[in-house]
Length: 115
Image (cartoon, rainbow, N blue to C red; front, top):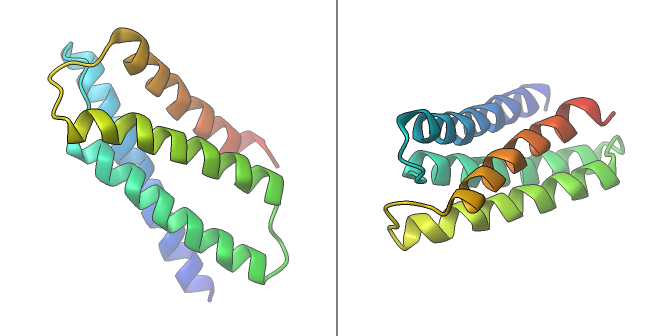
């Protein structure tokens, strides 16, 4: 069970790296668009997060409030990223783009600082 949790955490972090890295590449490149790496990254985070929550709930060491907030933030990020990618938008409105970046940072902050 411990190996499964470690692999899932690793994949969860890889998904985060894809989301943050894709956003940073877009921002630093001056394009302000979302890419498929971000879409696959957030999908990976949602899938592994749900399984990790199930494993934590089975072991009675789940912080349901924190995990609920993280799920809602990840779901919101998924919608914010998926719609422009599916519609193949060349550029994203500045407010949408930077709100997505801020939400990525907030989601990471919740994961790290909320004990």
